[in-house]
Image (cartoon, rainbow, N blue to C red; front, side, top):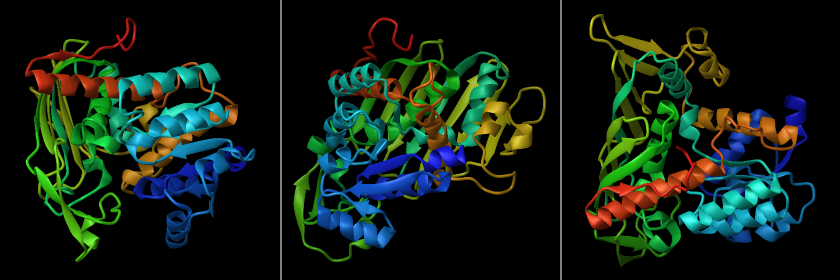
Length: 393
């Protein structure tokens, strides 16, 4: 596989936090990252020099016109995903897109239809599925080791937008979409628990909160998670209406019920996605900030703390594990594991009949869940996820 991967040429759209993360993970696999595109050639050149990135293309069109490029990763701001992914598909290249797949379900449905018609490999970066113990939890639920899943709780907490001086393009609704915290990090929680349960979210009851209604925006661009390094810069006051946090009740198709809290303003929580699943026999709990430990709860015997150990895990979890027990795997490793599964299909020339990675279908479904959250918050009532008949049933 390594020789075949080295024959694949990839372009990256976006030079921020995610663009660098994708590049590093692909290089670890041996995939040939041949070029990048930034918001401007000047910005891309500066970032390429600082982060040891490859050739800079002047535009997305120039990258797509290169016949040597086989696949393209899209890591640009949300409002560019639809037009850029559509262009990649039209060019006949495989496409890997950061979430959200689109800022509306109309956009994400269009991209799904285009990708399926073109027959290209298409994937959305729900990388948090690819912690080995998340796959372990999925296998345990599928094998009925918890009994019947009944209750799911948890959420996703961060603090990088806690202060009124914190700023990023995600705070601009025209660029990020109608939701911010829920779409940005809540979508990962939704995808995680749906993947583990093997059951889609059907209905939501959401309460959205905007605690900081105006912020001090720097006059220049600010990369994700980089506001703390700005120092004293010129700023202007900007009103903010997007969600800082949310509390959401959730119903699943299999009858399970859930509650989650989403926040980007929780001091001290850096990247704390967590879930607990209570079944009729046992429970599971996991936290992304401690990814090596899976708690297993019992009624009639002592509880367990399962360490990540490929020799003691289900085969699907062991297959995506890169290191022996005791050699910590973390956030960057999830991208390596995700991309390994995607690029197996790219090497084969097209998508598998049943891909094991999150595809544009999963990306579209996440947008549908987020739109249900927005409708629920606006109406103050339960909202049903509006899937077509047969989708994720």
